[in-house]
Length: 260
Image (cartoon, rainbow, N blue to C red; front, side, top):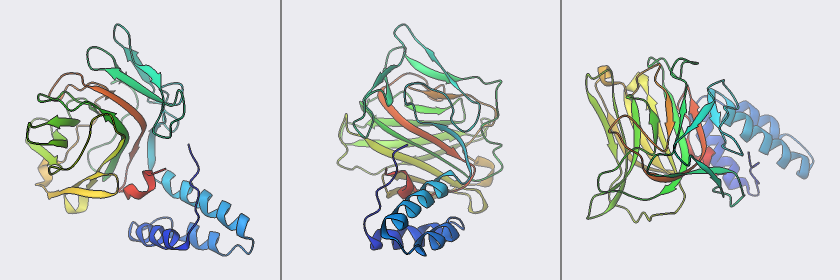
């Protein structure tokens, strides 16, 4: 993981406000700011940011040389004729991300392994992605028949979408408006599900691009389904994409923390 380089107090204050609204990380930041030495203070603050990022983190695939889960035990297995290929990541470092050819290469977790989420709690699902937008898109990453992310070419514009079913009882769909997205550029895509308020938020980078309140019976998740990268069963099909830094939390996490 790349440690954030904190250089300005306005950024620290912004992060402090955001974390305080999420009921986590505030004490870590306040303790860090009490340091009297500037270098120690910045190092302490950087560690505090990383600490805040780890609160509620239940699965983490940095994809740095392998597809192992660094937090849980939900390791990913490569499939396909050629299979996923290690490539340059979103920080321009070698062998730090995987590319998928959009034909038959993907990663898949063991559906009989460690549960992903129960479907009864808030969660956050985030990853860095870049790839091709398709008129009839496959799924760039998802969770079995419970969740799918897409890069969509709707002829008039390029859009990013996340959609879900809850054991077939209904569809949750968050779709970005037409923006100046481009193919083969890195984007951090984040879905947060605030269960107490039944609100699904889709972020691209730090921008909230779609926010909707759904019927609680349409919670966008199906528990016990496998994680897939480069392919998805919900909607079906592969999509040409490169993926980096995949995280799943059992709480709502501000996407500003994923920008490093």
